[in-house]
Length: 158
Image 1 (tube, helix red, strand yellow):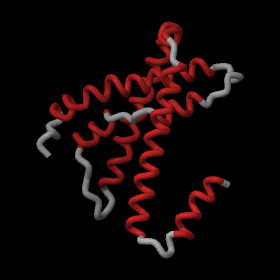
Image 2 (cartoon, helix red, strand yellow):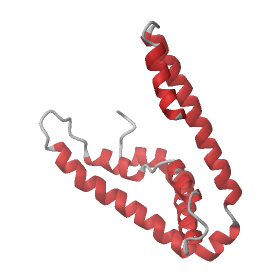
Image 3 (cartoon, one colour):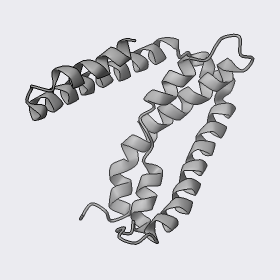
Image 4 (cartoon, helix red, strand yellow):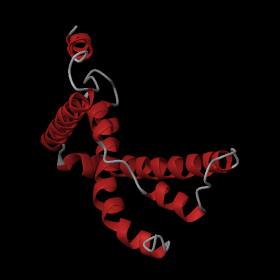
């Protein structure tokens, strides 16, 4: 109900208001709420992660990281050739595709899903460990190596 009301109120009350100002205000509000939610998820992730996860589940984490990277590269390199053939589309160069494939996601959704796993699930600890490993790899490896990757691909001149 709360979500329904949150969507209806701006539509009903905004009939007489300045649409541009209302849109900007709503955009700022939702951006702020998204930032708060993301930080809370990372805070919860930081509270629940343990050193034992790395000691016990390091192989599962490595397999998860490799799987995510492989899936990302494969999906992008199969999708872009099709998209590049569409009429009116500016083709995405191979170097740009490589950059997109290396550029991971920040991990908020991954952490939220991992934190929502029920403890009754037999492999919840392994799945949560894999999720944490992938997110930490994204944050500490992919994010920090992005500037050198951009230079190597010669995309810094664009």
